[in-house]
Image (cartoon, rainbow, N blue to C red; front, side):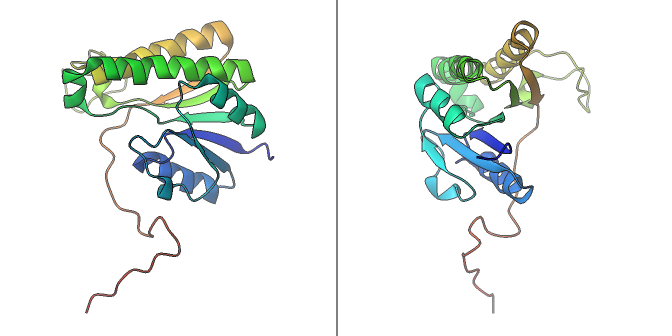
Length: 191
């Protein structure tokens, strides 16, 4: 395999699939690891799909090693604010414990670079608008709290294990692909 192989957790979801498309166009090979609980296998078109959960350390380690992955883009998470309030256990298990399992698998496989899909929800109710990246972080729901916890874990792992990480705190992702995900998909003409 090439030294340009990237593992994309949650790569069968909306943001992950678009990221895989961009990676492929930039000359990278995206390897998707997704349990397909909310993602769609049909969205994986630019590299192999490994159907597994990030909590499955054996599957993650073998994927990292077998594909000689050089970095991870981590999009796998539960991501509904309202649901996080009614079912916080799911969010702490999936988002925090799952991320810990992923990080530990990465360390065992010798992969020390990760881009983490965090959220603007780490800020909570902002004191001023626009929100500056250095604004205080005070999440008001379990979803935001889970994302902030993972950011802290990444910082601690960086200091202790030389793990290189970046956290992206974007707002709601929305939009449409000007070209369909499937390059073979016919678009009907309007008359």
